[in-house]
Image 1 (spheres, rainbow, N blue to C red):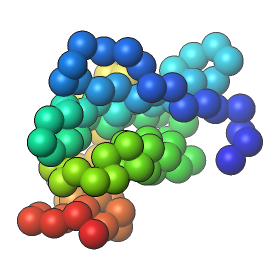
Image 2: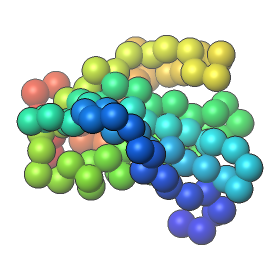
Image 3: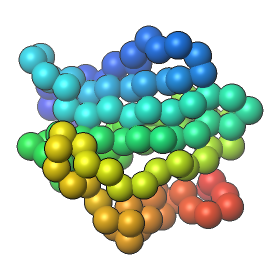
Image 4: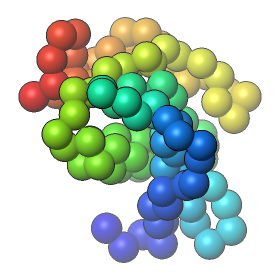
Amino acid sequence: MDDGVRLVHVSAEAPRLVWELHTRTERVGYLDALDSESLWISHIGVDPRYRHCGYATRLLRAVLAHAADLPVGLVAAPFPSWREPGLSHDHLRAWYTRHRLHRGSRS
């Protein structure tokens, strides 16, 4: 995808992993995870101006590729990001299910 938004794997203290999406001038979104015997996704946030463009999916795919041989767990719940509400619990659950992540397994 050549939309001028680039993925950056940000340095963080282990076991924390952080990926960000950036334009030339600003951060578009981020994903926080904890890496151990399993990879635990804790936060995904996308700036409201960039929502519904596939950036959260891009972040999720990056972390799943990074953890291709690890079980992936979710510690995800809606929270205000950029001081605006994100997805509701039901919408968040549906979004992860669409990406083949659901209770008890990763396909």
